[in-house]
Image 1: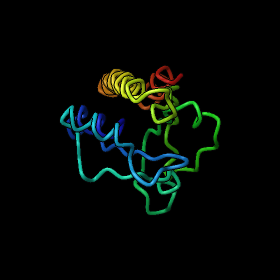
Image 2 (image 1 turned 135 degrees about the horizontal axis):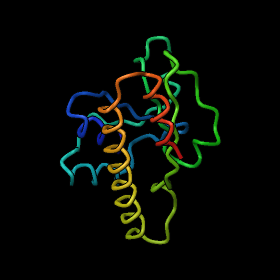
Image 3 (image 1 turned 60 degrees about the horizontal axis):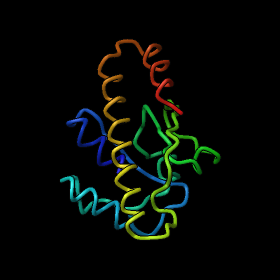
Length: 143
C-alpha cells in the first residue's frame, strides 16, 4: 500500500518500491481491493523480497522505510547507495483476526496512517535544501 500511495501522492517526483522480509506468493487481497477502491489499483503489484533490492543491479534508493513491528527486529539487507533507514511501527493488517470485518477495518486504519505519514514525508522532502538537514529531519519521522 505504501508503494502505491507514495507513487501516487508524489506525482512522479518519487519512485517507491515495496518488499518484505517474508513475502507471500501474492499481495494481500484486502490491500489490492483497498487500493482499487481508492483508484490506486494496478495489475503490476507483486510480492517481493527485500533481498531483491540488495542486488548489485537493484535501483539505488535514498530512503528505506520499514513499516511493521516485525521488520524493526530483523536485520535489513545492505542496500546499494547507503540509504537513510527509517522505521514506522505499524500493525500488520495481514495478521490473523477474529473476523473478516475486523481485518478490513485494520487495513483501512493502516492505509490512512500510511497516507498521513507519506504526506508528511513528502512535505519534509519538499522543504529541504541540504542533505545533512534532510537526514536529521527524516529521522524525526521514524518511530
